[in-house]
Length: 454
Image (cartoon, rainbow, N blue to C red; front, side, top):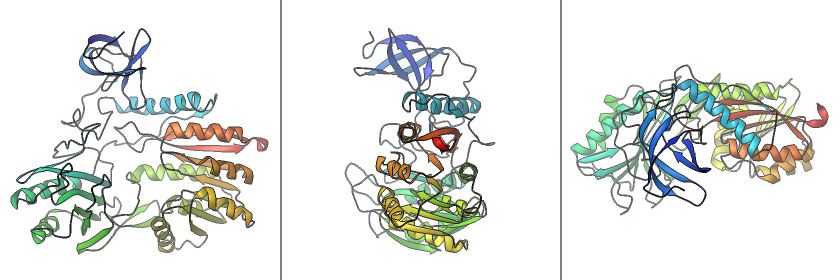
């Protein structure tokens, strides 16, 4: 049996859900970040639980052909990526297999078609939003992602999964803070001025918004910061100060002050225009978002006379896609600000057959049914925790012909598909989409039909 601080040689038999290598000693699993399937490695046991242990990779004795040199120089320290040591082709296969494993182990679903993961031609520089914590001390400011499983900021000059404009904003912000001795936020002591820097970019419009998050409205040398960003950032349209005085892990506070320019920027997903404010939700990989939403539209297979419910509709992005081919779309979302954004997005795009309702989907949808409004197709795009069971039961009671499930977590997806299976719905096909290359995350679009209609 393995013990903490023990150094051993092991063979990597498989990959865990975050892409970490999995070895076994006498049947006891050990998870090793940075190790690949098929490799023989020397490790040190750094943590042991009752049912598994974590090992630190010390040396690779036999190298997998799927291993590649990470593009980023601070990859091993930073928590932003998990898979840069794996070839991109292998990443796509890993994500497909992860979905299959979840469907079989958690969902108890066999013989479901899981298609090859839809990847990117260029799996770097894909993020249109970056939000980075600020730390260090006066004159020696650190801006970067947190190290894995900690709040230690790994100072960085460039990040290969975000747009290059983010690198420029980080550089300019550091220079300004160091030059004028602006105090970075100290999380433990809950003191300092600058907490976070956020950059948002419209990939199709080229418009850029820079948001500086501070603990109070007072911001020393504010004009110098504005001039630095205005003169140094191509495409700048908006500079915003967000005030967050709370001792919290939540990045943005409720109050925004426009320091220069507009209070929003714009971008497009396919033919649809969206206005993006500091607090707006907008998918961070717009290239793959088009792939994801068009696949959802394909799986909905609308003919033009259907009523569609879009549960967890957010700011209405999927609803607008569905409205192209549906008779009527009802979008439901619990966040009031998101519904206001959804209504504005519909108006911006001259969409008249989409209606948006504030409330919990599991309550609003049964109320719609009671009023005699029933859907032919239901689309759900829940948060990571998946759908409320009450919602799935309400949908099944309504008996729509088709359900399209858009998921950002294969585990909760598999659980919900198991519930739907018991409620009379068959999972026909699953399309993984790589929205976050170099990380362990995978999104899916799932086509589901009533069993008695097959």
